[in-house]
Image (cartoon, rainbow, N blue to C red; front, side):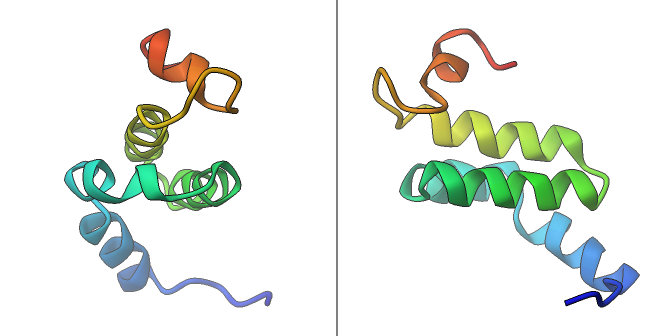
Length: 76
């Protein structure tokens, strides 16, 4: 812990874990996992990509799940 992320690694994460990948993967993640991953993407400077991951995840949430409202309210 406490390491500074290399600029190239940050670029690689954002360019690898695209919104298209989110559509294939995000529904399989738990709400906690997606929140942590979205926070990482935000920290790396790509809030739009973080939102895309949250939205893709929310599509698989059922009523009462943490992100359900996001899917049915058009995002937050």
